[in-house]
Length: 269
Length: 328
Image (cartoon, rainbow over all chains, first blue to last red):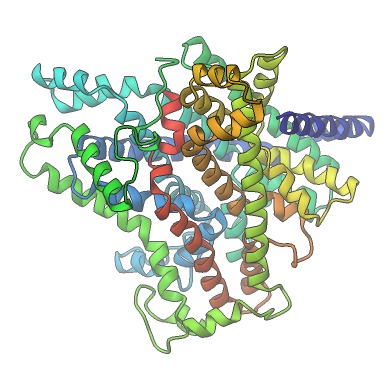
C-alpha cells in the first residue's frame, strides 16, 4: 500500500524538480503563460463549456433518474442499460463516430439539417463547434451520471415518500423538496467531478481537428494548448508551466468543494 | 447522513437466498426485489397518459444514445465510397464487413496494425486494471482494519491525489519519462495506471462495511496470520466491491488516450485509442481514404468487448459503481 503513495510522492518530487528547472531558467514561462491571452481564452472557453454542458446534462440525468426511480416509465431496466452504454465507449471512438455523423460534406446530420430547412449547416463552423462538442460530451456522460443519481435516489427511505403521498403532496414537490435534498451530496459530487472533467477537455476537440483541419484553434482548451505547445511547438518548458498552472486551478476548485462538503459534514473520511 | 453508508443491495452478497442459485434464479430474485422496493406508480395520482409520455421521452433519449453506435455498426459493412455516398442509417451492397475486418490484421499503409494495438490495449488494461485493483484492495483493507502511526495522514495523502487532475499530471509524467528513457516503455503506461486513488477510497469504504471487525479479531484469536485473514476471510467478503473496482480500472486504462498519446512514439506500442486517432488524422489529412473503412470497423471492434463486459457484469455497475452510495 506504500507503493501508490510512494509513487505519487516520487512523481510529485519530479514535478517539483521540473518546476525548479523551469524556474531556474527564469520564471518567464509562468509570466508568459499567465499573460498569454491564448491561454486564458482557452480557460474561458472551457468554463463556458462547463457552464452549459454540466447543468444540461445533470438536468437530463436527474430527470431520467427520477423517472426510473419512481417507476413511471415502462422498460426502465432496459433503458438504464442502454443509457449507460456510452460510458463503455472510449472518448476517441465517441469523437470519431460523431465526427463522421457531423462531417460538413457527407455527414448524415448535415442532411438532416438541410431537410429541416437549415441548408448550409456546418457543425464544425466556429459558431456551432462548441455546441457540437457539448452534444458529444452529453452523449458520453449522461448515462453514467444518471446511474449514480439513480442509485442515490434508491437509498431515499420508502416510508418518507409514502408519508408524503398520504399527505397528498404533489409529485413534483416530493421530487424537489424531499428527494433532491436527500441526494444533494451525490449531486454536489457530480458537479465537482464534471467540472474537473470540463477543465481538462482534450480528446473531443483534438479528434475533431483531425476531421476538419483549422476548425479547432491551437488554444481551443488549456489541455489542448498545452499538448500543442509541448509536441507541435516543442516548447516543453512552457508546456510544463501550463500543466502546473492548470493543475493549480483545478486543485483550488477541488479543495474548495472538498472544504465545502466537509464543513457540511457530508464527507465521512 | 454522513457515515450511514450501506452498499447498494445489488452488490451485497446474497444473504438469505439459497446458497446454490442459478443465474436465472438470481435474476428473478433481483427483479422481484426491485419491484418490491418500488412504490406502485398509480399511488402518485398521475394524470392518464403520463406513463406513456415518459416512456416515449426515454425512448427518444435511447435513440440519441444508440444513433452513433448503429451508424458505426451499419457502416462497418460498407466500402469507402458507400460510407460517404449512401444513406448512413441503412445497408448498401456490396457487403464488405469481412473484407474490412480482415484489413484489421494487416499493416495497410505503414501506420500500424490494428490487431497489434488491440493486443497492446488488452495487455495494458489487464496489467494496469488488475494491478490497480490488487493495490486498492490491499491498501483499502489495510486502512480500514489497521490503525498505525500516520495512517490517517497517509490516507489523506492518497485522497489528495484524487484532486490532482490526470491531464495536468500527464505532461510532467511524460517529461519525467523523457529524462528517464521510459518513452515507449510499457511500464510507463502500466505503472501510472496501477495507481488508483478512487479505487483505494472505494475499497476502504467497502472493506469497512463488509468485513466485520469481530470476525477479524476472532480469526486472530484462533491464531490465523494476517495474510491468511486477508485472503481467506476479508477478500471473499469484499469480492463484489473488488470486481466493481476492477471494472472501473480496466475501463479507465482501455479508454485512456492522453497518456499513451504522449509517451508512445512508435506505432507498435500504441493502444487502440492512439492508433485510431492516428488513422483519423491520416485518413483525412494525408489523403489515405482507404483508411476510412478501417477506422469505422476498428472503432466498432474497440467498443464491442467493453459493451459486452458491461452487459455481463451488469450487477456491478448497477450499484452506481459504488459511488452513489458513498456520496450519501
